[in-house]
Length: 425
Image (cartoon, rainbow, N blue to C red; front, side, top):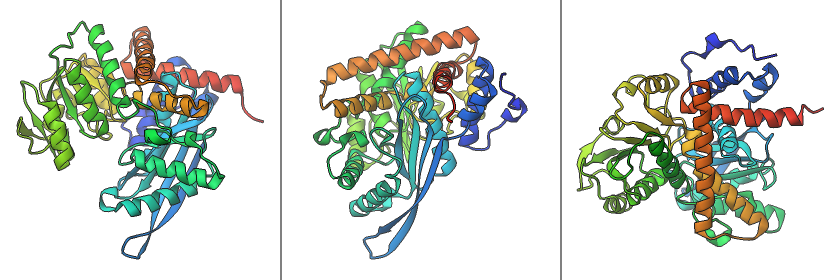
C-alpha cells in the first residue's frame, strides 16, 4: 500500500520543519513509499529538551534551553552537529536532524541523522561561560550520546575547542578517554586531518562534477559566496586554488565584489583581522541580496536557511547553485530555478563533505589508527563524486531536479534499512 499523505497540504511550508517534511512527502510519492514507512520517516525517533543552568562571570545564574533530536537510526548511530545561536528553535533542530539522515544515506556512510542546539548568543559570552555552558549541556544530553549511539560535531558557532570540552566531559563521566564520542575535535585529542576544510572541499568536488556535466570550464569560472564563515571561507580558498574566480563574497554584515576577481588570500586575512569582509579594499561594497543576484557562474550560499526565495530566484544569474549551507533554498524557489535551467546542488549533497570526514574521524578514533591527509581527501572525493553521479542518474530517471534526485537515493536507502529491520516488537 503506497502512502496516502494528503498532497494538497504540500503548499507553502510555514517553517523549516514543514519544509523538510514537504521534501520527504514529495519524494515518497515519487518512489512509492508505503504509508507505514513514510509516516515513520516523517517524525523524529527521539526529541530531548534540556535546561542548561550556567554560572555567568558576573555571578548570576542563567538558564539556557538546549535540544538534541535523533531523527532516524536505522542505518547506524545518529550523527549531527550542535549549534549555539540565539535563533535556535526545536523545529529547526528537527529539520536539521532529518536532513542529516538523508545526507548520511546519500554519501552511503553508516549513520542516521541527529542535530543539537542551545539557544544562546555565543558572541556575547566569555570563553569561561561557553565552557560551563558546553559542559553542562553535554552532561544533560549524555543520556543519549555516545560513540555507539549518537556522535555530535561542530555546527554554527561551535568550534573544535567546544568539541574538546564535550569529549572531556563525557570521558570524565565514564572514567577514561572516549575520543569517538564527538568529531571535529582538535588533532591533538583524536581529530582528523582535513576535517576543517572537509565541507568546503566536498562542495568543490561536486561543483567540479557539475561543471563537467554542463560542459563548462572551471578555469576562470565566476563564483559568488554568500556567507564567509568556516565553509564559505575555505570554499573561496579551495576554489580559487582550483582556478575558479571569486567575484563576490559576503557575511552577516555585508559584502564585497570585484568582477575581475577578489584577492582571496587578502580577503581571508581581512576577515580574520576584522571579523568581517566589510571594508576590504580589493573590491566594491555589496549587500547580501546583491551577492545572491550577482553575475556569476556558480553561487555558493554558505550562511543560514531560507535565503533563496520566490522573490529573488528569478534574478539569480548563476548556472549552478551549490548549497554549502543547510536549507538555503525554499521549495517555491527550487521550482523556479529548475524551470530556468539552473542546476541546484542540494545541501544534502553539496555540504556532505563535513559529515563524511567526520565519519572518517570516528573510524580512525575507534581503530586508533590515523590516516594521512592525502588519503582522507581521496576517500572524500570518491564518496562525493559517486553521490553526485547517483543523484544525477535519479534526477534524469524521474525527470526531476537534483534535490529530488538526491532524496530519491537517500530516502530509498533509509527505507530499505527500515524494511529489513522491521518493527520491534
